[in-house]
Length: 152
Image (tube, rainbow, N blue to C red; front, side):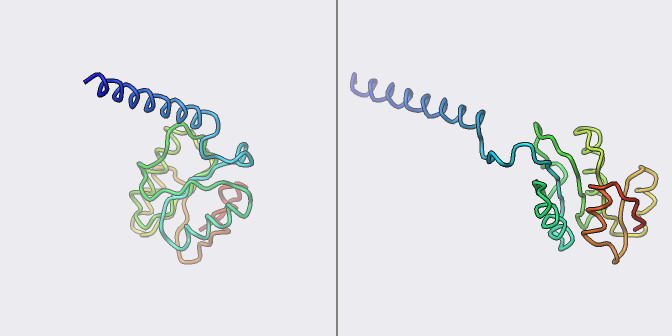
């Protein structure tokens, strides 16, 4: 019985030690590389070819990409510089835009309007958006990162 209690206390102590080490790891370095610190972060939502091309362009220009598949998967505690809402669902794009603006204070954002019938929602909400088959990753990148006025 005493041996069992000693073993149990040992397991608890080991667990406590491991949790303390994990806390130190997450606070000090986490999974971020040293060269990543100071680089801007862009949120890209969407599983489209356009979203993948925007990601490639961002990474090529030394901007970290935080990829999500739903608007509610944004991590708190992050400082995002850019937001690209490029899913195939207009409602999700609008929701992410609103979350980005109100919760995270992101100023450089763009959405993809997939259905011309929904364009009035984007206009009514004052959302910067691109529409049409002529929209390219480079156009979206320039519109957000450089603030270039792009008629899409």
